[in-house]
Every structure is written in C-alpha cells, then in structure tokens.
Image (cartoon, rainbow over all chains, first blue to last red; front, side):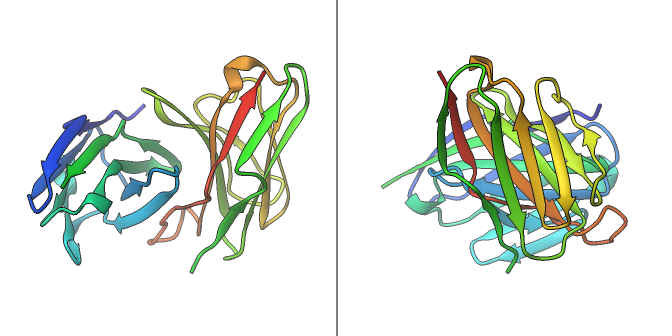
Length: 107
Length: 115
C-alpha cells in the first residue's frame, strides 16, 4: 500500500516562531487533507488540498501532487497550536494517515 | 457544519464482552469509516462503508465487525473484547468517493479500555 511519511516527528517552537511540516507519499493520490489533533483527541480539519496552495489565517498549505509531497506552514505560532498534525491521503477509496508531527509551542 | 457524533467518549468493558460503538453523521454522507489510534502507530483503518449495508475491510479488520443499516449510522462491533483492543476509536464520514470534493470529518472519539 501507499506509504505516508511526515517530518519532523517532533518539533518544539518558541511562541511567535514559524515552522514548516512536511508530508511525503509514495504514490499518486486523489485527495490529501491536513488535520490538527487537539489534546482531547479531536481531529480538526485544517485543509483539503489535493493540489495547489491554500491559506487560512496563520496557516497555509501547498501540495505538489506530481512530486508527491505536501507542506503545512505555521506562522507566528501560538501555544494553542500545540498538538499533533496529521496528513492523510486517499489514493483510491482507502485513506492512509501519516504518523504525525507532534508540535509543542512554548511561551 | 458537518457533525459526526459518537455514542460515548469513554467506555470500560471486561474481556469477552460484546461491545457496540455507535457513530452518527448528519450530512447525508455516503462514506463512513472506523479507525483506531494507538501511540506510535497512528490512525489505522478498521472498516469503511460506501453505502447502506455495504462494508469493506480496512487494514486491521480482525476482531471487529460493522453494521450500516441506515445511511447516517455506522456501528463498530467487538464480538468478544480483548485487552489488545484497548484504544482510541475514531469515526469519520465523507461525501462519496466519486465526488471531486471528498473531505473527511471526524467525531470526537471513544476511548475504550478493556480490562
């Protein structure tokens, strides 16, 4: 099956810093999503981005489908950004999640 | 907004018990999914359904079954719970695989402990 790798696995940021999270996948995909899992376990939808670039406030994402990667940018990080960030891809019906990037933003 | 609800946030059961986890979505989505999440293993797909009464095995279906009698409801069944099924269970739904826009939405999760 498709392999989905996220980097880095862990990240510690000072509040206000910027960061880039990466998602690489081993095959072509129909869909790609980014999620943020909060401390209570809820998965929050960030972006639905099979290709191109999208922005939502301090967050933006870019997917280059032909090169099989996606990037999530977090600017001016806040403590509420802490949690685990997942990318999920759908090559054909079955959705596969990456192992996540655990982000800790410290004051 | 899409709303996906799960019957319990926390559940404690004994080994050998039959366990039902219920999931309901209110957006007329065709697809529904059950995942489990374990530390170091990420989210793994157990079963999914793309229509009423239809089901497909995911990556780890052993020890589980599912039921989808109505479009809005997808149940996960542990016929005889075992301690290795202690986990966080997450339900999700999406519009349909043929759609050009097939975003998944998740419920809040159920933390199941099997003693």
